Image: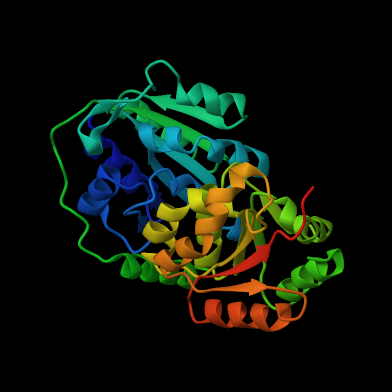
Length: 186
Length: 162
């Protein structure tokens, strides 16, 4: 499974839920395959999608927030896992697309082959799942539908040369339409 | 700054619409944070950038946020301020403790303390330095700016050596 396939499967399967997607290729894949007003695409500030998602989850306990993250991204902000574990948001689902590389910057390796992100989350008492195939991924998404978080789903993906188009909405517009969808859907 | 004033500043901001106080502690604002803990309104994170991310999520939920930190942490956060707070125009108040303001402060604060005003200027982040007399009008100024959707900074000088 390549990242674009995995991103598309999760986004389509969860329906109209809020997604905060990490900068780089993950946001581009999401924009290309399943653009919605309820997607918050990050352009810069690598590592912070999980923190933004936590702030949203804490303030909107009746809505569910999916964080689309990469292995490089979460490794850059591991503290976020700790803070999330301590605040225990029931409505936060952290999805990590793990190809053990910084693909957006040229495919340099991350250490996620040696240090397993799902094991870290498990230690912190996240409900933790790992998918390596599409079938497994769909099963997990069915399973967590009504489950209380924090949940972390690690999806092992393979590297690929497929790149999605750039996000052509400016940052302020991304924020405005996201906030509007948050306000209208009370 | 005096203990009482710091506590008054917390109460004033809290009573005027700031709902979230997220940050990394600094001894310069010890009493401010202490007051926040009493009101159960403080969230401490592992790093300043994490605080800013969380505050951004809260602000986008129409819940006003303040991020507190030492100026060393502010320096850590420069790229997060430019590429998240300023790029997306997300309002929040930064409360920054200014170490290295006094010439005889600890050596690790000397350089960063010296360039602190230049960093704010380089970012074009509007700021005011709080003191015993002006704190109320400075807080009003900051509250007014975030109502208009603009981030800004309030600076607390480290005026003692321990």
